[in-house]
Length: 577
Image 1 (spheres, rainbow, N blue to C red):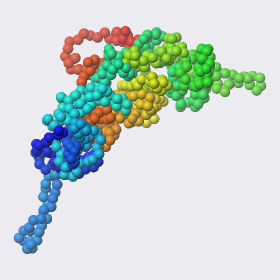
Image 2: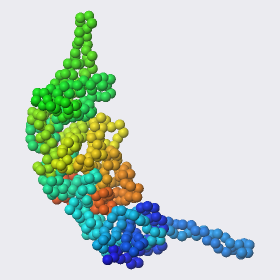
Image 3: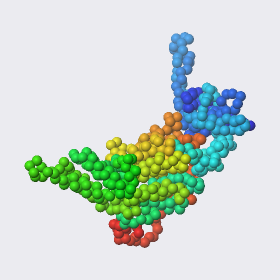
Image 4: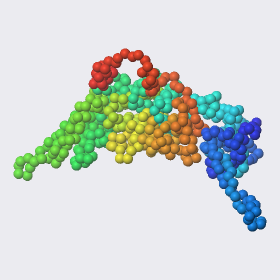
């Protein structure tokens, strides 16, 4: 059975230059040139008895003037027999193509597609445009081969609306993924569409970091929320406290120590000694003496924060016996005054209440295990959404990074035979994973946690899906580890440049379509898709709270006057209840 059947109406031209994965096609007639469209697929037959075709995607279509010299007889006034070289303008039509795969017959004489290319086309090899029935046949082939027991239905191919587009669910999460697009391009819909399908699986396992409460209405997900000032001290299933004792040494220093102070090194040493001492005392009081040999400053052991402040205050005010029988100032006298002010102000600030003003149930030895069950137990809920909207912006990166680090470490120490893979969906990643020189300590801690997951997570079954509207502001180290790119419309030049740099040189030209993508249309490149494709995403049944407000339509409606006094009270209480 023939794979493709082309007549002269499909002919585009012949190969005149080949370079690994790029081919230049010379087109002789303008009529044939008009058959070429940027982004269109073409097929080139390889020589041999076995039918085999290379599939390419058109990058550019060019019509270039070329000056040629012709020899003409000299005019009569010239010397007899003299010749004169005259320039003449002609046109060279060129179509540049990037090879993306090949189609061949398998052992059962059925066509199959592969991204592997073992042979390049010969010079003067014919090139045909894939359209009409031939295009449908090829897109159906892609659809059939993509549809497996581990496939994820995304929508339909833009170039053939009848062909269903699937992604490889295994490779999408195994190799990490970045989902990038400007505001209003359909990012939240795409995320919700992926979550919706994942929720149908018997034991899917995803954690969504939701910064603005966009996914708070998804009924198939369980919802956790970092408590606001009005809810402090109360225990509820939906409230997620992040106790201060979960912070490791680096995270604690980024929050409490000002490195610019002259006594910063002494502050670090004294603070760490006091914390370690309190953790040791807690283990002894709980009868967990077997844990003392493994105790470190990073061990997540509860301890009374007030006792740490008291110890630092003692050292700060300490007077010791002097040489002549009197008293003199201690070694650390007055060095911790500013540190004590920072510790006390953050402890008493209700904005940080989810760290310090926590229920007594969060101060027990078993508190962390219970919290991890709520975060990672897929038997209770396959999708967990964590709402960080109440977390102050100055410590948001540390808090998001803290949750990611704890989840990753527990996954690391879970026995291999019972370890269940999970994915972290990092919405608005540019907020807590910035790509800036000289990040502040708070941002740096979050970046370090996520970079480790990006580099090593797949070994232990932890995947990342990085979602952002400003890819140029996201850590390039993290983006470079994402081998799957799902790009929606991007209008900013810096963002487009960032995405192009993530692509192999042979595929960079595909990114030129980013500013003209329609809302809900995504360009998918990477291991999760057989062919770099433009896909029109099926909208999710349950929509996130992210729809752009139709200003003009709303202004045309008659409306009641809002209760501004009530809104002010909500702002003061930091709650809409």
